[in-house]
Image 1 (tube, rainbow, N blue to C red):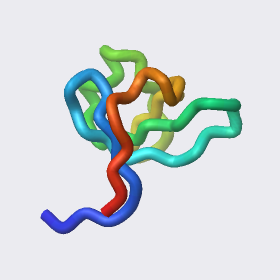
Image 2: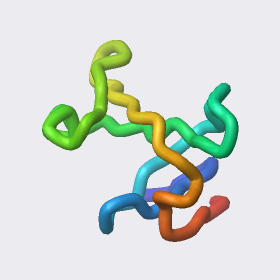
Image 3: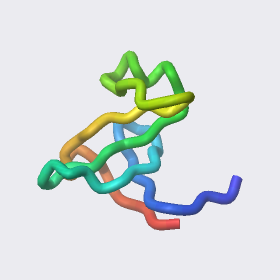
Image 4: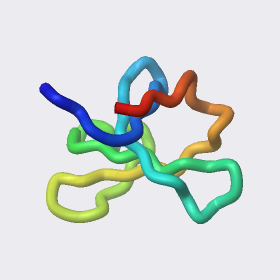
Length: 63
């Protein structure tokens, strides 16, 4: 799969993310409904999000 955008590692999994309005935070984006068990909330059709602190992620990857 060809990826494009900004990704990060959170709890051992790779997620796409965008900057959050919250200072020192990013908004993780998932297409896996199971992530709701880990604090993600439903955004819209097949998209789930979670705001986490920048210090909670392992690294940031740019594709």
